[in-house]
Image (tube, helix red, strand yellow):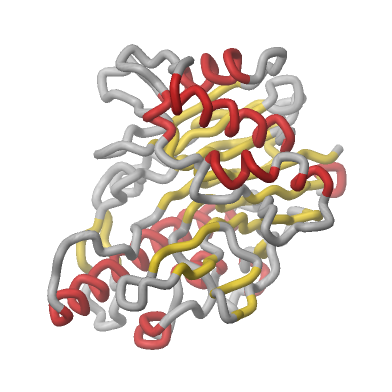
Length: 333
């Protein structure tokens, strides 16, 4: 059996709900909900990781999963999507997922051994100086188990939204350099923490998928050369353990005059003012997972794909990211 697995940064979905957690059904929020719904319905994913989902309150009075279920019932009538979420973040823009309960079962299964939970501080040596520093995931990665209808484990899934490299304060160039280096090390630390969890799963003989907005790509910029590493390549794993290396479902992006291709988002260069295309949304799968048809649903690139072109305007307006989708074949596992 094949399952469609995807991930989508839906850009501040919190804004589409009122204070009680009900979907807004008027104004620009209603229009954007319709656009997002058209995209999600066209993708028809069996499991869709959601980045920047609606808020979860610590007291549990409002959760991302409950709001997602109400939203899908409102804007995708006839769908039977269930929602799931994990530890609430310190801020907003939650990590969550929707899935088809007639295709698979999904459980929130965080590792709870003392000192290893994603919602707790952790130590990492990001500079190779044999000195570990304390870090914390601003948005605790969402650890899930995907099960078949027979309750057999298909794969572990980790959904992440790691540290942004953007600097949004007014700073001089010296301070800009300092903050850039600091933010990059925080990004590395978060991905090192996630990669350690992947190794724990793989050492137990379990499969794993990492997906989300990693805010980094392959050999994208100066800092990756400066530190001799990139966040995505940390997630991919150690070449000295080739059996544990994760496989990207997308090809390595190529540099063009407009940035990278394929691309899932774009950002404005602070110095030049140019818009640069970047591939920062990823799905990475362990060796035992057979996948196919990995694709960024980008209407600016997939000119010959009728399904993508049919919802071109919604893809452009619904979010500042394009979703990533692939198929996994669980019958071959």
